[in-house]
Image (cartoon, rainbow, N blue to C red; front, side, top):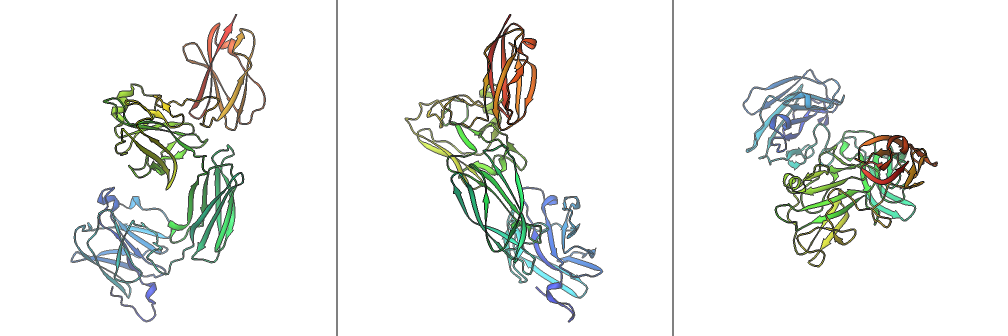
Length: 466
């Protein structure tokens, strides 16, 4: 690096290159390439960037930003007062060294970049001429390499499950003396929803997360120059209380059906598929925003089209993942939520006879894709319990239903053909009998009562007499 400054301008105030991303692999070059320049509090009329022998690029100096990113498409630039974006007029070389120069006012910075690596950003190490390959931090500081940035950082030291009392979370606040953070947590076994409060942090800290079992914990600091360490977002999994269960494994199905595994969300809340995967094999089950809904079953396979054709019906959710091959004789598979293994299943030649699948929950053969066997002694969590006043009612008599549920329950009447003829919503913690007008809507004969929370449903047959 060559830096020329007037005596009145300190070194740290000069604009300098801090990051290049020459060879993105997940998106096209026009979407992914960028050059990042750190401005700090320096101000001038213009800023210039030159790449080797090409004509220099000229930009008006941003008036309020402390960082500037050169991109091909400025619509992809995040809108923040501290960040300015400008047009990148060069295609970045991805197979050789390159030389870059910037100057503004009396400051000048020149760098020589090493040969890029596919999918890796080049991050400057401090104010030296050294460059490190990193994941990339578009438009924000990288606290691992940049010096002199304002950065409060959270780190997690330990998690302690106290049976019946919830969790104790221990961590550390570094980079600043103190800060006020927002603590949010969700008891996955309760219908109360997210709880939120402000907490003061200083140095080593410990926080209580009140939950009956597994929980979702988030701690967030006010934004600063390096937001990558401003938050902690963890699932706290209590042993024996996983929100996700492996409910069927088909490691040796009959040809041509592909191997598949069924998982089930037995919690009351949607879980992000972008944080779920098979441990040690394959990739994530979805993109940010995709979720496994409450009480929903999901089939995972290497070939979703072939599995859909083999099953022969559409009312089941299937996701294609590169899960590898399952050993037909003996093997195992486990599910990870982030980096925590939350459930596993194992089999050998005595578990089940091929070609057949089995239920790890019940230890027996099973072939019920997308459907959960639930009984009075089920190991699956049921979102509600219910009682009917009678299974046989007269035409002019009322049928009543009593429900115990922490979530809103959808109650429906179905005619003898299974078509909905009446429905109602029962609020959480409803404590009275609920009248169902079966005689008015069903007619004489067989009728059905459907009770559901999320995608979990129970259907009970009743008879209406004259």
